Image (cartoon, rainbow, N blue to C red; front, side, top):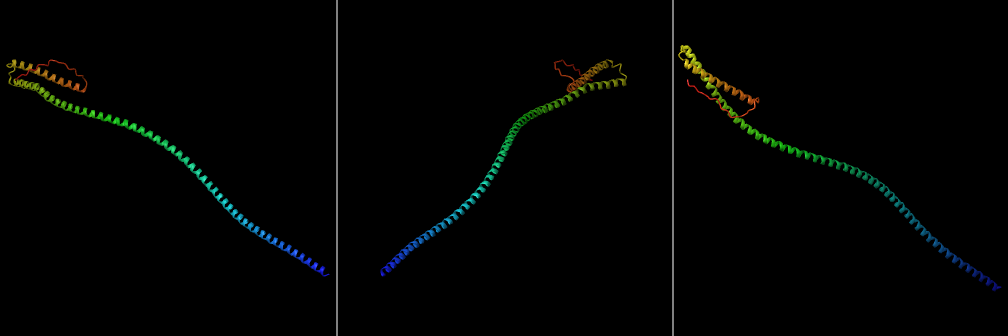
Length: 239
């Protein structure tokens, strides 16, 4: 009876030990599982934190990309605006070049006109110089002509006075003969004096006709035709 009891007790103890060992093993396994679960939870938390950080970085990068996209849009607009301005400037430069070319053409035309004007001025100066020289010569000729005319007038006045004095003296002599009643006595002298009167009257008439002809020649009514002719013979009578 005691053996059975001891067996039972031993068996119960062994069963208890086995159950305790099994429980211990299970507890150990549970502890390990809990540790693994805690480790996995920590990893998950780390992964979650990393995911949160990655999401934040992605959100930041998305924001940066959006900002960069906006900046690119603005840059594209600026480039388009600058391209438009460049096109406008190019068009303005083309117009300016055309205007410069037109102005250069006008300057060339003006330069050619100035050259022609300078040549005309030089020609006019030469003409003026020639005219001045001709005027100087003409003035000298006028001076000579005036001097010759003065000399001519002096000579012609002397030539006119000479027959007039003879005619006047003869008239005075005839008057004296008439007053003294000696006409018959002085008949021969009177005939001689009448011949002198005729001759000096003819001489005076010729001088007057020559003066008239000279005036007509100077006025352009006659053309001068020079030739060698024998002049009339002058006879001076002494009273």
